[in-house]
Length: 451
Ligand code: GLC
Image (tube, rainbow, N blue to C red):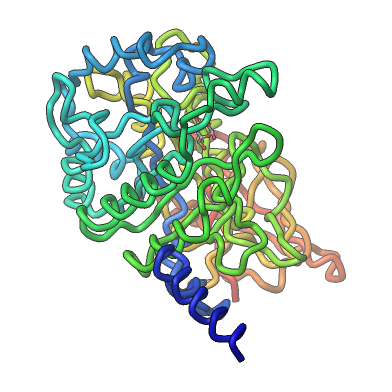
């Protein structure tokens, strides 16, 4: 009896001193409820990622502090000159919208630790640079005004915070365990964990409705960091309690926790098929760069062509996923001319062909894509889209669907495409008569009305 009451008293004390453990559980949801919460996002298919921070000045990768093993003192010069005098998020938002993008995710803080928002918990923020303003506030207002859904990227990693312990991906990484313990003496991850929560609370309280939060990233194991280092579950509970509709990525290291993530994030790769977890298809979004690095990289020459970028988008939708395409603005606050050029080309295509992207997904079983094509399908309108990556010479055969087709047209100009049903009835093929000359469209699309 006595032990029991001591135990109850201790338990009570414990909940008092660690209030975060008494936050409600992660909200429970049925699969249908989750699909409904994510619906605007799965319909949107195409978003803009923006990586912007002090690393825009060195202009040689957002990991420059790490790659060149800089100390805070060495990196400080970028803080002192940060003054993006041409920053006009309305222009950014207009370019994103014209490209066909429906949502946006900006780095509120990247690994370097610099905050684009006016946080009460640090001095290391845009407000204290020569620029002197809250970048996030301007961003949120501008993109919202263009009708895009607004999200934040928040780096769990922090190469500037004095309490963040040196680990294997830190600029000051070490070769031996003893060197780590020497350097980490006095650093207090408890304080850093509080710092994350305080900032997440600010970001999800001070800027109105936030639709996405993109935490980045966990690397558990020796000299790494994972869920217990961040206190991931409580960060997530906090985020969900402040913004109940928010959509969250899968980099908090909670992959096996129910409700621990909303979508998976294959980075800079083409997936071979719709990603599955325990045999079930899951929501996914691939994030991709124009040229390799996320932050502005002046001398990078590996820029993808408009056709390659469109293919990335169509490919993702053809496997039931989204594309989050990244821009790294310069330290003047503008999109580099190469980025502007790509966005424009994509917008030109989207203007006429968005119907094969928005609200579309993988084609149902039984529809096979002919060589050099990608299929997408709109389950509501029951239209099938054939994207012609290499333009065929006058005709194209679609196998096994002759009895399902009602009408076919080019999507860009709604001009009829005549077709013949196979003479061999058992084959159920159709052959389309296409003009020999490729229409003036980067990737022409056939829109097929199904019966
Ligand atoms: C990686 C990189 C980072 C980038 C991110 C985008 O995790 O660390 O620089 O922000 O990918 O997905």
